[in-house]
Image (cartoon, rainbow, N blue to C red; front, side, top):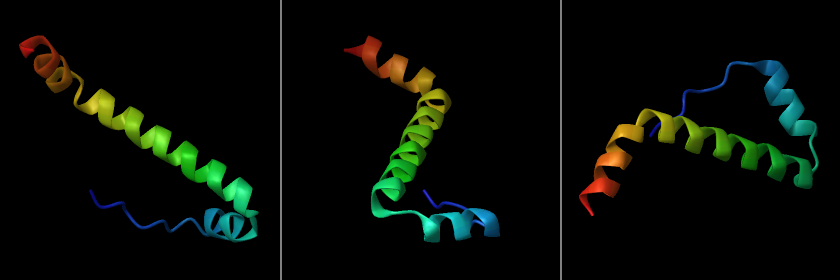
Length: 53
């Protein structure tokens, strides 16, 4: 899955100024958001796969 490039310069500058620990937290938050979006998008398919077993 390709992520659309970010054109938000404030976000880019903020990421450059973050410490490594803070950047890890931002990446973890992005990962959780992505997983949540995927779950909501494919929820019906998950239910079908679980009920088939």
